Image (cartoon, rainbow, N blue to C red):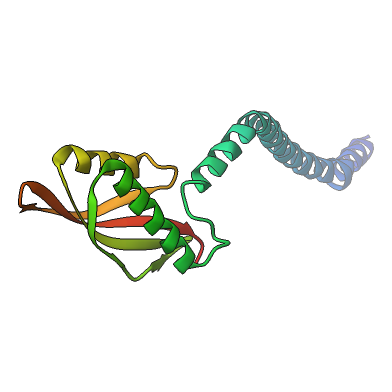
Length: 172
């Protein structure tokens, strides 16, 4: 009787050791895999929601990028052509506003990451309202211009301004 009980206990113990224990480790492995899959699924759902938001925003952002690209001179033209176009715009703004350009010189283009800085040094002479008008026409033109250095001086009954105007060209 004791042998029989001992034999049954040994059989049950061997079943547990050879079959139950491996099943328990497989179960913990499967639980781990299930948790990983749940995390990946949660990420995927999050990405899907964000992609729908991005799809709604994308056309407007692309439009903004295209509008901002128009502020720069094209990368398809040479640097000297861009400087020439910039000079023509400055001369046109001077003519419209009534100031006289006394001196105009091209600076050395500075190549930066993704764009080129185009400096033009000029001296203009006019009445304060004319100079203000020139600056306004230049700042509010369809291209991006930046005034780097401005020095004023008196010339007879008018004001003179030495300035460096920067234009920008995409690419190198």
